Image (cartoon, rainbow, N blue to C red; front, top):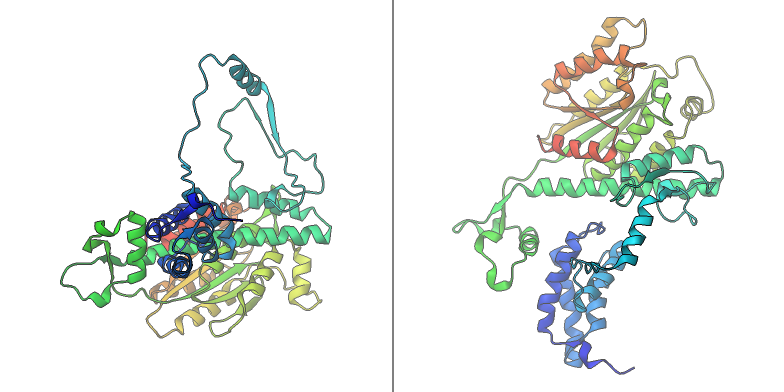
Length: 458
């Protein structure tokens, strides 16, 4: 097929197309892997040979350069954005206003407003959203009557929760496998977004370049990203658009502690404290996977899954945590006790894990930042337990803080329910008195935002 002469471009067109493409991709909400300035450089390298061979660039050359340099999960989006740029599609263009005399059109609006809209959680191929797959198609998800601006449906948090409730009622292994994969993908997506915000917090240590400063301090990649975000043309770039590094941020050593005692498996509205904890812990561990971390679980006994010196793969750990949401306490007991049961399982005895965490985190002698996250309903004492035993837990936490360790209590929303309040009211109050940051795990996305603030020192 002969080339369309109207769809050919001079090489100078790439000087506009590449930064325009990078900017649109970085600003698009569906782009999970934001392109870096290096992608723009690679696009230019790919386009140059094509131009030298033919003396011009084609529509396909530009689209292909955009697609092949993009992350594999974003290539469909990259193709669409590149094509929109080349055909001058204005995504912000408003649709034309209806004719004032369009009686038929207005009557359609009136009829639609009187109808009841039902949204079903049934996804025919199980390939769409996690929370919209079910064994039956007649399950009603939500109803809206005569309300405008319905939006796009429930948020990510509610989709995840709905999916978990659905999973608990599904026995078919293939369906469960598919939904578990979707659940993991959604939680890891939250973790990736958390990681991006963490990277942005780190970039706050960059300041505009000042004339006379050492040019070796300029962060080239961050400077190019800043120039692209500002939308500068080459003749508009200023010296203060370049960013220079300040003091390097400290490395981190992080201990994650998860409560798996019996109270964590009490269901309320189809979800329990272990579910709320795992919904926050999995994306948090994924977002902080580049840091040194350790993980321990506790009930009456302590179960160390990873210390700082293990080179364990993260994915099996995340899979094990996800499985906790769909286990009973009996199944969990048999798993950790190798098929046997005993009378000491399931109590709330965090002391051993707290002592292990204290020894682990205070053994770090370098200047890294040391952090402990505790996921629990914070029923830290059993009925009838001696106050002295309970006070030891707070003493260990106080010693951590005295050693410069930052501690964050990740609190299940069930801790605020009447059934647990007689035991949690006092423990949560004491945690605040000690100086520990409390963050609720009810909504995973909001929880991660608050953790971002905590890590940033806010």
